Amino acid sequence: MKTGIIILAAGSSSRLGRPKQLLAYKGKTLLQNVIDKALATSCRPVIVVLGANAKEIASQHQHDRVNLVINEDWENGMASSIITGLSTMIKNNSEMESIIIAVADQVFIKKSNFNNLIEKQKETGKNIIASTYAETIGTPVLFKKDYFEALLSLKGAEGAKKILNRYPHEVETVVFEQGGIDIDTETDYNNLISQQ
Image (tube, rainbow, N blue to C red; front, side):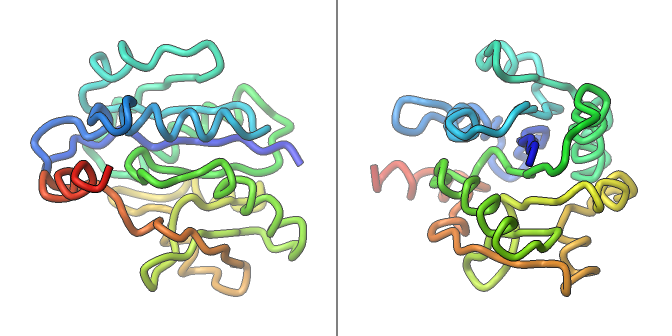
């Protein structure tokens, strides 16, 4: 199954007050950490969608195995970033069978989190495989191409969760132990750093 990964990294980190994509953790930026875990899988291509502070973030994340794309409409919400990433993916890879959507600030993501989605899809034959943590389901999440149209029709602040909620019978989940830990505020970051 040909699977690509889209990493959403276009947000302005308004609650943090500086680009969270560039926060350092264990010698890497948060974004680089997710990119490295994505590249450790056999999934290709890996596309990173930038928006706010795109120039600054891009300058620190040049990589010949990663396709950086800029979402000019990032201020309109997450839907525009999903659409930008998926449109790029489809345009350049017509044989793409599924995609995994990830976000830039899930600090504890591992290669296995991506691979578990693919394994579960093979086992169950379900079209959507989501990660489960902290009593919710979310990213990283795998969508078979049957759902590309639905993703491309998202609007505004809608994320992929809207589709998970709309087609619950199509969704299977895998556990992502520390998936609920993301960085939205300075307090979140300080807590993370203090645990290094």
